[in-house]
Image (cartoon, rainbow, N blue to C red; front, side, top):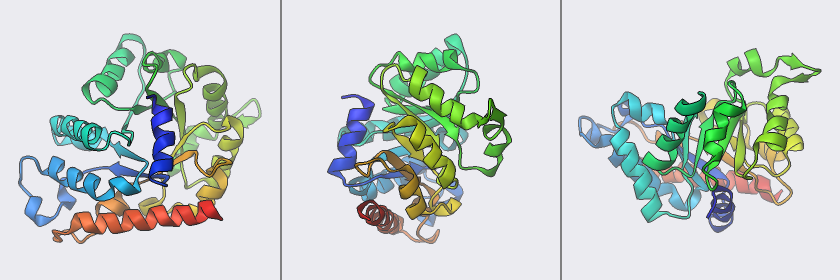
Amino acid sequence: MTFIEKLSAAWQSNNSLLCVGLDPDVAKFPAHLQGQPEAIFTFCKAIIDATADAACSFKPQIAYFAAARAEDQLEALCEYIRVQYPHIPVVLDAKRGDIGATAEQYAREAFERYGADAVTVNPYMGFDSVAPYLEWRDRGAIVLCRTSNPGGSDLQFMQVDGAPLYQHVARMVAEKWNTNGQCGLVVGATFPAELAAVRKIVGDMPLLVPGIGAQGGDIAATMAAGGTADATGMMINSSRAILYAAPKADEDFAQAARRVALETRDAINVCRAG
């Protein structure tokens, strides 16, 4: 099953556009996990189990694992999802961007070492920096387009031939780079007008949409701007608002995460139905 097929099936089977981001910050873990050697795996596994029926995808952010020297725990988590929840795609949030042989190694890292279904990539160095990911014909390459951070405007909104750069990226990916039909784009919920512009350019291409929850993106505006005709087309990501829904000392962190995940999924679905 390809990434797109798996994602499309997850949208339907879980009736969800919610992507649960896994950004494990040990300093925010509940007290009973502090100091445990496998704390990151334990914490994230509990989150996964608590939210799997509410999610269309999981998105581990590799930096949180690498900074804590916990890449082995990330490997174990990806394997856990593949075994226990094989219908839910794993999007490795790595934002890789390099050329030639180096990009080939980054692709191997994402797809062999971690077994991810898709990986986020940076288009700044052009097509040859993205091409190695496309050689994995069943996997997804999700290209940064209009990111949710305010500083994204420094480059992404620069005018090129009368249009902002992010629109050129969207058009290039949709028309030239999407050779396997497995590409997607990252477009932030914090910029609904730009999200709508990208959707108009790329048709039904899936969009990874960060920025709701802690970053303040509006769910209704996001759905109106980025939804496809069948009210799918997006992985609307929430990380911190779900992961750290409970007070730090609360041992019931997973149930708090589940509550917020269900509330977020349901709020998205209200907008889908409307």
